[in-house]
Each structure stands twice: as structure tokens, then as C-alpha cells.
Amino acid sequence: MPMTLRRPNGFASRKENMGEMNVTPFIDVLLVLLIMLMLAIPIQTNTTEVDLPAGPCVDCTANPKINIVHIDASDQLFWNGEAVDRKRLRASLELANAMPEQPQLRFDPDAYASYDQSSRTIALIKDSGATNFAFVGNERHKDFVR
Image 1 (tube, rainbow, N blue to C red):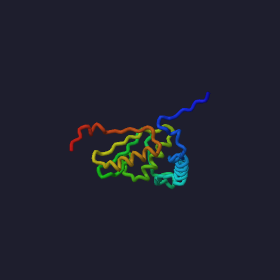
Image 2 (image 1 turned 90 degrees about the vertical axis):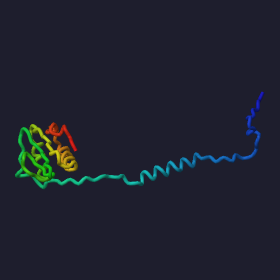
Image 3 (image 1 turned 30 degrees about the horizontal axis):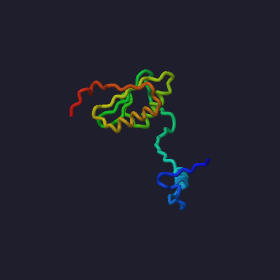
Image 4 (image 1 turned 180 degrees about the vertical axis):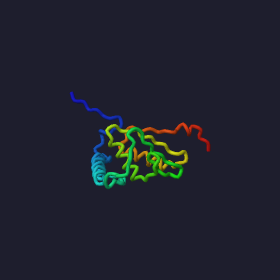
């Protein structure tokens, strides 16, 4: 015996059309447009300028045991006590890293050396591929007074 069920709000007894809009196709179209927009936007790339040496450094030296990179209070770079610029420091680092057994590289900035110069020098050392790296002289700065 067939049975007819009625909803309590009387919706089944109405013969008129539904007044609600089906939003599923609208959402599908928006998702497709979103994907197309994501594919159309170019990927953002960051560039880092690298100053590559023209050839091997003839006057670069590296100690086979320990090399010291120092920054003085006026932000001058020193390689084993000798004043150098960034290009020459890079070439000396590459020479030291090319040795069969990589020498220890000690980073010893002055207390008044700028943070910017220190961080750029650490990044240069990292980019050169140095693995035997140490910070020295930190015990001098344990009592920091303004």
C-alpha cells in the first residue's frame, strides 16, 4: 500500500517552482577562474647579484690549518691580518676550500663592526662552501654595556 508523506512545513503540497538559486555551477565557474588567474600570474623570482671572479687569484694566500676573517671597527675586512676587499676575500675563501683538507675558518668581528657588514661577510663565507667554520672572540663581549 503506497504511502504519501508530507513535510511538516507543507512544502510537498506546493505546486509552484522553487525560488532558490542553485549556486553549484556559480562556484564551479569561480574555481575555474581562480585557477586560471593563478596560472596566468608569473612566478615571482628573487635575484641575487654575485660577483664572480674573472680567474684564479694570483696573490691570494690561505693557511692550510687556520684562516682568520676579521672585521675592524671601520668595517674593513682582513684575511689573516691582511686588508682585503670582498672580491679578494671570496677568492681566498675559494682557494682555502679547494684544499684537500679544508682549513678551519675563524670569524672574528670587532665589537663595533656593523651588523650589516658582519652578516654580509657570514653570507659570503656560507656561499663559498666553507664547512669548518667557527666564531671566535665572543668571550670578549660577554659584558655588554651601553
